[in-house]
Image 1 (spheres, rainbow, N blue to C red):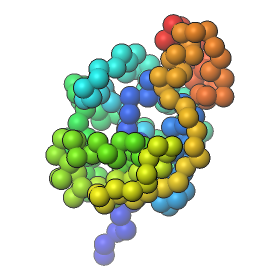
Image 2 (cartoon, rainbow, N blue to C red):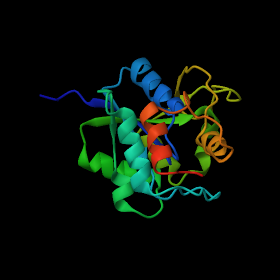
Image 3 (cartoon, rainbow, N blue to C red):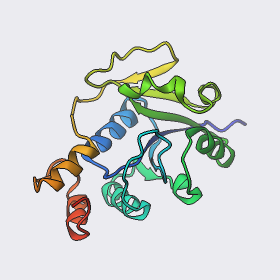
Length: 192
């Protein structure tokens, strides 16, 4: 008898820091696609050309854990952190499928990232392995030549770079990040 495949969403990123926008996107994907769970997948070193200054992986992971601890629909996947080095989605997905062959994965990306998919490492193979989910955002058409599942999401303009900028300018980040993350950032003097 074939066991029904679990439907798992993956929201990858640097999460430098995680913010309420990430949680809203993950929850919208969970609800709209009727997923069993959404995994937050922090990268160790992002493979992007524009090198980002990220705080230590351990601190980013701790902030994610604090953000999701009260939500049964969320979890964290540390594969890229444990592997270290640059994170390529293909390598991560290949490994996840090996570990969990009875899971159907839904990889969640911002609508603005859909246009960059053709440049991703081994993108054709990835399309055979997983479902891509595009989150409609301001400035994204919600259309693509690729096979993308689109979800609607409240248009909330929060970004990690905005939060880092606010901290450096001594502005409040209350309501932009979960309360426990705000407290953690202050206690550890992050992004100052």
